[in-house]
Amino acid sequence: MALDAQDIANRSAAAMWADDKASPALGMDLVSVGPGRAVLAMRVRETMVNGLDVCHGGFIFTLADSACAFASNSYNQRALLQSGQITLLAPARAGMRLIATASERLRADRNGIYDVSVTSEAGETIAEFRGHIRVVPGTLISLG
Image (cartoon, rainbow, N blue to C red; front, side, top):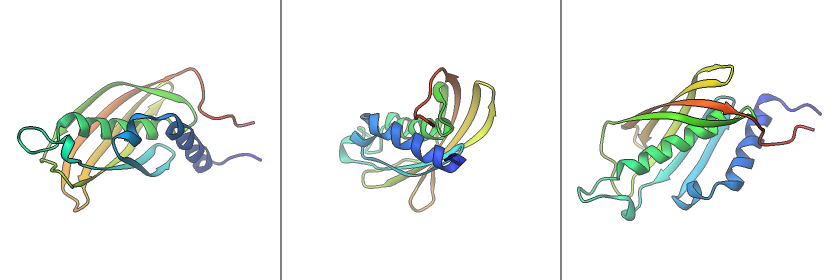
């Protein structure tokens, strides 16, 4: 039985999630995944805020990076972030649920560009992230 693109994305995400120790430890949830896209969410904990009482930018970067990873690995090809740039636009505070929505901008041969928008549940844009990925040898799941 041949798998369609959505099945491959779902199975690839399940394989990634099973081996991911960091994302669940930070309280991230995989909301949805599809070919070239993914949505992850994370609630900002008290232990994630800095001395200015806002979420440390590193946690927001990690959420965006994780969404980029699930989107870029959705084709059952192993893809790694080569570079990522984040622009923090608004503060995130303890208790806020952040939603990172990753979408493929370009996929060509072994390279890709993915944009991630991090918003609050209320829809306020918290950050914008752009990731450049590189496909490396190997797969996440067996298609046989």
